[in-house]
Image (cartoon, rainbow, N blue to C red; front, side, top):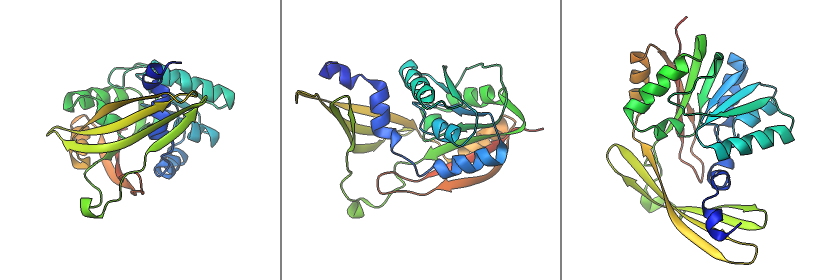
Length: 248
């Protein structure tokens, strides 16, 4: 793989920037134990949450718009003989022909849907995949909800070694763009031969509050339940898990 190819390797960068996050796993485990399966993981990525739940005995189905992430998910599930499978599909328009007691959207998946119209489409699509009184659990994060700049330590890079390549990603700036928050990350790939390639990658998260999402859910026919909180860590801001129940 060339250095340029490393920078375009979505599954690896997804793992670098997301795979080590574990602060939210207890919430998903509790909800899966309470609601039962099979669980549907919307925006499953390479399986950070879905494979954790599958390892705990839950049947899990995932959907993600990136085929590279879905392939990595499938390989990992197969290697571990876990009851989990994933489909390449858009969170706003998938159709699996199945219904679930629990649908989850971890990290900031719902903030990557292109604003309110995208969230409305997702809410409608998910409703078709929920059993009566089934639950949609959505994590929201505010990148500005952190310690004051004067008290913050410089961010540490997220680092991962893959097949002799060393990949690192460091958040360098968070910018308020009104209806979205832009996060700039400095990505570096060092080949086994020591060649360095780097780029600046920008991730944009739609600005939406827990109260705002609960209101959108209510308008879409859901019933809002008491939200749960995921505490902040040294490297990650905290998040709120909005709980929306489909009527009986």
